[in-house]
Length: 405
Image 1 (spheres, helix red, strand yellow):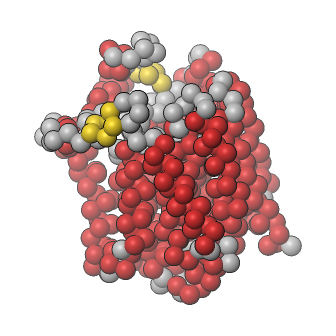
Image 2: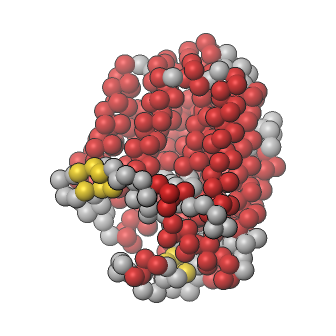
């Protein structure tokens, strides 16, 4: 009976996330999209709350940190509500606000093997096949496949499981990888994410050597923090440094994309200047804050300022919740990757630990804080890495489960 309930929770969680993602291609109007998204996420929240006694894992290491993530997220929402005045601010708050409510629960869900394998099975059986429909609809729409790339971001970590999956899932994941790459060549982070996942999958035997994996994790976790501090102090701007190198141009049917151009310095300046101006380093400016942006000089729609998420996930975390929220998120990434690499008895969880460290690195470049499969899968994987049950499994045990999907 308990296993049946767990499977149902996992199934409906992923199905509702899939509906919330794919409906964007069907309803281009923002109001309709937001209503459908909200309905899906409220239903997921209701499922979590009604089954909280099952989902909450009392044996999860650092569970107090996960609870702090949830409580501080509620604080951010309440504070953002006191700032919101316009319809656009409230619409943004209602949709993005579910991030802070749902994702701490996904960490607990990821810590249970039964939950996680049910989630993987649902992703493979329903979410991935639906992506081909999404691909066709998105190409007919206005979004230039931006939403298709976000929806199929679950393949980033599924690629790591390719050696252990059935042939049909291997084919689907490889085809989606190719279509995701080709559908939007301007998305540099998508290209990096897919190639690094395949690199980790092919050369895992080398990367997971004890000394190498520890060094790689250390670099991925602390290098972006160092570069950020050097950047805001005016000592060294890594984005400007790369921009000064030889241009690497990719031509598409409609435009040419400079893959080394600096498109991040301006948004970092906007966000940091806003935090300094409002003196909210500790608790941030909330989700609904509107701030001045240099984009107003070149693009329409920013004359009154910019609200909400910028392109870099790290800036969203810092802007929304300040240093406190940033430290909470950092500790989730740091501790989960540490336990996975230092305390795991199997190579699969160790790979996921490196994956988590890599994603921490990448959110300094892109990965805006949004309700989508990328961030949902991220917190599920954090739960896997924290889970003693997963870390104590042997390679054979996990491979046996993956081959049954």
